[in-house]
Image (cartoon, rainbow, N blue to C red; front, side, top):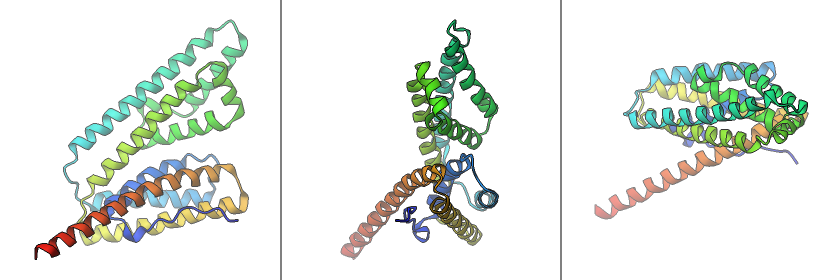
Length: 249
């Protein structure tokens, strides 16, 4: 049976909801270590469209949400810092296996780039890559287990997920729900590009059956379900409001 990505009704999404959804799934897909040229090209095109979408919309008042994003970013950075200090402790261990495990983990973090000085999206992408490595690669899983650092990494990842939720919500409210015609046209392009990317990921998995693509689909499905729940709630409340207006008239 063909494995599928859940249905996302792009035509029912408001511009802010679309923006928030794409902002959340781009790092998930970009973190895949086996992205092919076609998928990479489509992702780059969508990223460029998102820049145009942001430029063509008028931001609402989002100071509280921006503060929440900054706080969530600080929380994940502090957690990552604690994790690194824990692992560094074992670098000077008299037990060779522990020192080796510590160096392996720290090298992976270093190879991901200067995480603490990255932009918000780049840091998210880096942490997604590290989480995939630390939770699916047997060598790294064993290293974390040996250092008793699995739970500490779990805290980092939990705070990363909290950050993504906060960041996605902020981007949603940043976009007014009555943008001009230009913004609608850019949003249409973003919808088509996003749909093409999701279809390609689905096709790649069903042809190649690589676990990386299945992991992407599972994570994207979670975000699709969240987004459609928001849409259904909004539509239900709007319908109730219309009914109330009819009763009054």
